[in-house]
Length: 210
Figure 1 (cartoon, one colour):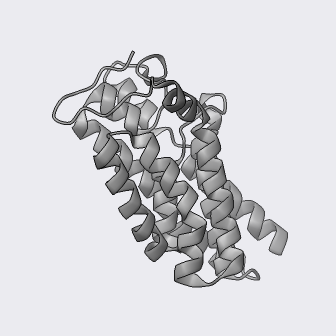
Figure 2 (cartoon, rainbow, N blue to C red):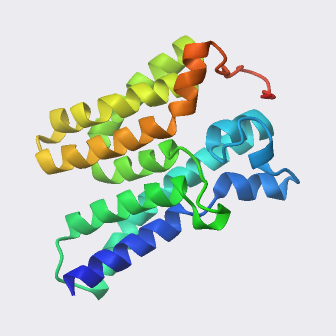
């Protein structure tokens, strides 16, 4: 029964996370977001290609996927298949949701970078740690206008912020893994930053990314 609880929780979390919000919103606007801008289905590319309003919507919906997986999905499984501590199921659901977004089965396992979905997971699991890394993200983003710089710095800081706010070594290890995954998903951004070709967000207008 415990194994079944973990499997069902992971499946629920993955399916919630795999909903390709950016792709669906862009498709409704007659755009295949995979072929424009950076080609990513996440909120940043939606912001660039579709404009601020749609970008914010994609951001919120992607975050909501992660939050629902942890806060509701894991709880439902715990009620139906008792026997596993809820906190373990919540962590399982969160990891699965992020993997679902990053490797969505609906788009041949190609998805986003998982930052917004991770934020939704963190709201449910480690809200104070999220507040710390969100502050770092905002400062760096406003200073550099690179979303990637803020995201990478936030991902790197996540395990330290988790330990500082929880002193839970297990949870810190999980957050370290999530942070590493986020940084790995930004490897192309890191290369562009090193090459000086990374795209900045232009405030006040829709950005077209070559």
